[in-house]
Amino acid sequence: MTDTKSAAAPTARRTDGPRRTARPGLVLLVIAGAQLMVVLDATIVNIALPSMGDYFHKTQTSMTWALNAYTLAFGGLLLLGGRSGDLLGRRRMFIVGLSLFSIGSLLGGLAPSYGLLLFGRVVQGIGGAISSPTALSLVTTEFEEGEARTRAFAVYAAVSGAGAALGLLLGGVLTEYFTWRWVLFVNVPIGVVLIAGAYLYLHESERRQAGRFDALGGLLSIAGMVGVVYGFIHAANDGWSNSITVGVLVAAGVLLIAFFLWETRAADPMLPVRVIADRNRGGAYLVMLIVGAAMFGMFYFVTFFIQQVMHFSALRAGFAFLPVAFIIGVTSQIMTKALPRFGPKPLIVLGAGLLTVAMFWYAHVDAGSGYWNLFFPGLVVMAAGMGCIFVPLTTVAVARVRNTDAGVASAMLNVGQQVGGSLGLSILATVAATAGRSAGKSKAADLAQQVKAGHLRPDVFKHLQELTAAQQGHTPSAAALHDSAAVQAVAQIQAHSSGMGFLVAGFLGIAAIVVALILINVRKTDVPTEPSEVTAAA
Image (cartoon, rainbow, N blue to C red; front, side, top):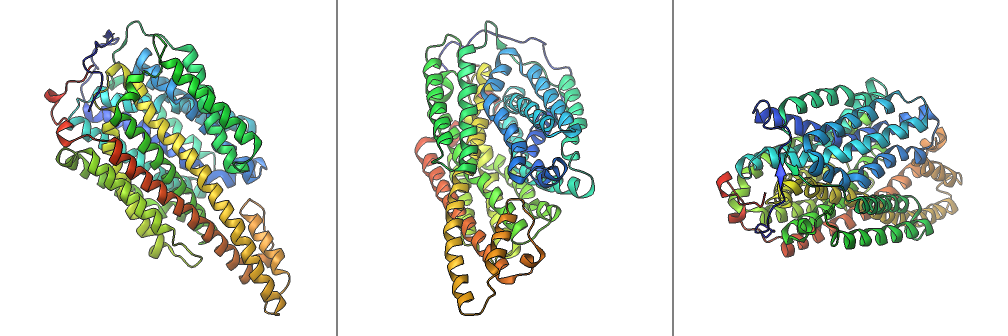
């Protein structure tokens, strides 16, 4: 791997001295616990959205802003959050991020109004944008590069990958047996425990002695990232040809170009060029962006299909994803042994390949597909791929980076996953919606022929419209629910649209394989196995 190892490292100092008690297990528990809390939130709220909508008397479309408010704050502030740890100290900012996340969860859980719920979600997003990249950078500074860090990465990767599946399960349990408020309240006691653990067991990292915030770079990055995320959200709801979508994305592109140009000239840049100039690190970021796009889309389509077509309850849907968490955890531990033996590149390619196979397998979905004959095998292959890819990808992304750049290097990996998820969801949702409209016209023509032939009643069209509207939060009539022809037609339309989404996700997987093969050239001899082998600039 190439990096600016020969360059003089910036002056650094420890602000709080060594940690109070050297307990690596507890250190890792605090870091992994914080990451799990943030990752869980990405899916735990999804299950509770219908209940939230009933309480606040909002439509399903309106309630998506309970997700979007968090996503905008989280995605927009990731770079600033990561760099703040480099400049102000990682333990300090880690605790600040956890505190904000916990406060936001409490506000959202107590919210008597829709506006306060959204405000709480924004505060959560700000806290997550600080704590998530800081957590990953703490792994690089708390554990020596080599076997110890690889094991820590395995735990971190397992938590990051399995958290989405666990969130669906926990969200289903809390919504089913308590109220929607508990999907937010649950973060508060966990956050308090993690804050105490961080204060007791983490030591303050080194930071740039003369470091200061790049104010212009910060403003440009926040505006650009918020624009990108909002543009993708708007595209998913209103299409890519919408004038607002186009205008926001163009403006965001201009802002981000201006940001990168400024970073090449700034005396103390928020995103040092040396961080992304490394070929392997840049390749890792790009692979994460593509994999995030495919993975988030997969979770979205599978969740909706098993609930709307297969009629799984929220709790049963959560249990349906439980094997994902287990398989990712086991596979990530296996990768700690495989990484020194094979090197990162073959494992990243293998993981991307398994994800691609799972997506193409799901592309065969039809109205008669079941959990055990289609979705379970796909989840097993997909989870194995995620477990294979996260440990080596994280290792490449933050290996041999200067300690004073670890925060922003970690943030870039989170940016790739977050922006990739938003991009993938908007692209795949657009593809699915287009395919659904085409399938809907074709199915309506088939029903018209059957009505003309006297095989079906004319009210089948009304029932079809009601059942289609039900996917947007409207309540269909009892007659529509008992019209087998209309129910079957809706299932076939959704199966076709989901299948096209999975197909495009499969091509994204192929793109990830190509990027990994071309850009990542780390050999197994480049992966340190002992701390004495490390010659990082820090």
